[in-house]
Amino acid sequence: MGGFSVLSAARKQGFSCDFLIPAVVMLEAVLVLLSGILAAQTISEHLSDPAARDVIFLGSLLGMILAIACLKSANTYTPKALSASGRWPLRVVCIGMAACLAMGVAMMTSSVGVNWTWSGVWALYTGIALAFSRMIVVPGLRSWMPSEGFDRLVAVVGSGSEAGDELTGLDRDFSTRFDRLCTCRSYTRPDEILSAEGERWVEQLHDDGVEEVVILPSLHNNREWIHDAVKALEALPIRVSLAIPRPALDSNQPGYVYAALIDQPLSASEQAVKRVFDAITALLLLIFLAPLMLLTAALIRLESSGPIFFKQARYGFGKKIIQVYKFRSMYHEMSDQLADRLTERNDPRVTRVGAFIRRFSIDELPQLFNVLRGEMSMVGPRPNPLNAKAGGELYDRVVDNFYTRYRVLPGITGWAQINGLRGNTDTKEKLVRRVEYDLYYIQNWSIWLDLKIVLLTPLASLEGENAF
Image (cartoon, rainbow, N blue to C red; front, side):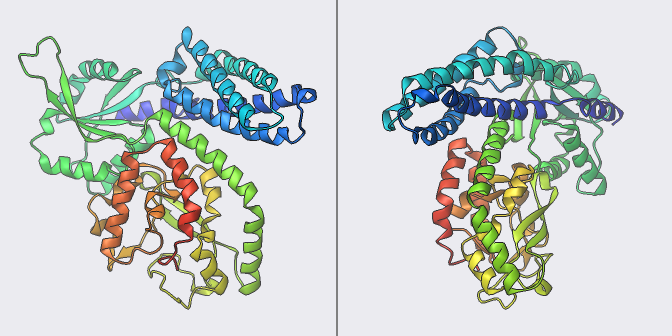
């Protein structure tokens, strides 16, 4: 484990790849948005209708989303694109300008007062801004990264000296499979992975930034250990693979083929795009819903004594414990911090204001702050309380692969919620159905699915027969 300790320390210096990709996505999203607004200010005397400025702001926002989506689809937010020079910056500039022109034309044909001038100036400003980002900012940030910053870190697990002996070949194998270099490190496995020692082992993998665990052939006969390893690692956003020796006849391709036991849910660029979507959506909703939230806070304070907000420990990303915020819906002295008892219909612990805000999910709005802090997403599996039960049993006892839900950030809303599975999971059948929807979301994620779920959530909130 000494090698991993050194690597962990190195990766914690300067910027990491996990930081750089989301930072570049957020920077370029802001640059495209500001370019549109600045273009409107530059040509303000050419706008035929003062109301067009509002339309232009909406167009700039939509153009930002379109530009980032196109840049992501063109793989410009991969480590390879961010570490290379040459034609990559030109490709980014061309895509960004084309997206702005397309959105400008769309707004011009559907709105009064918007003209060609704004579209052209917006595209020009966007091109200059994106060129500045890729030719000045990104190289500057990259210079602060450790040498391993762009490497995909792979933990190699085997018996005896096998793992160390195979590292050179594994580095070569993995570097040909991904769009960046891979650093393979041997890792001493715990004998009992479902133990306190095993929990520390899993936490170390997570802290070191491991993206894949490879189990070598010497452990293939130890099926019990492999089974326990998969169970222990299923909550982490990593890939777990078995290294299988290539057939002897396949001499032109030495090394291994890799069978995935657990696959990675989202790539680094997909996580970055999702994070930008979350931050922008949360900020807009906080601004738009501020009057409703202030009114709710006032009504809670008027009806009963105690704090306005309720804070509860729940499982989050990678099964880390986070503090989730809600508007308090129960009498303060009856609040259930540990979630030992599910809320019932006409529950005497719930205030009148609390019953209303729970019915329409208004009590969940403070979780927008969890989203801004990076602890939650707008869309994802709901974070469950530590002691939550279905049919009298803890959730993970009811569903074997329950912890797989934690491989993505938990969400304020989700695929299960818009499909009628809001509220309590008081029976095992309800929990099983909810997990099925959560796993479907993880396996089929796209930014468009997130947008669809966010737009449908208000309608789903009106269907609250199980929300009390």
